[in-house]
Length: 202
Image (cartoon, rainbow, N blue to C red; front, top):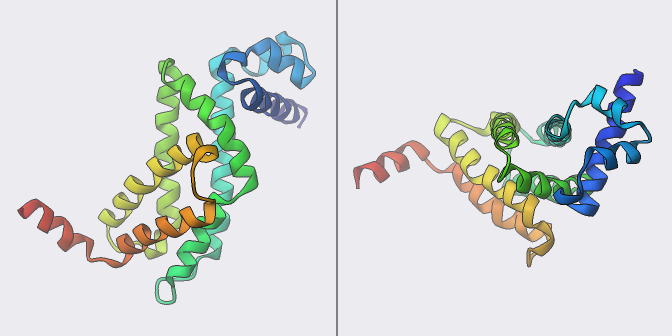
């Protein structure tokens, strides 16, 4: 229990430093001071900066999974689903204060991944987990594998971009959710298989 509490303090300290100082200000010493522990104690839990960043990515995925699980519970079944249900789901995913706070740190992690192969690989694994989460959230509404692939192809790049650029977007989350709803609804209600075959026949 003490180990888990200490690691939680370390990760919170890391998140705070990434949000306030960016990736250039993110050092093991600063994180240890923010967590109220010695540097050697920090290195006992996370042996180096990469290991700590992986821990932060795991925490980010855990929070996203929790939000996604709550969304799954709130979705009606396929027989009674309405477009407004999809919109409400997307609003809950986008207009979420804890998620928005995490977005500030995700953009720093993404920046680190562009010059750190270890973190890039770990982030790629995170995207695979995110794809599984999307299929879980929309599982009862997906009729074909291609629908699932299309949802993943649209939503993962969007949510990644949203995490990086949320503060600069010209529309509020509810309006963005409405735009995304049209795309998701089309994917879920169109005959994806015949559309796919038509594209290949041209």
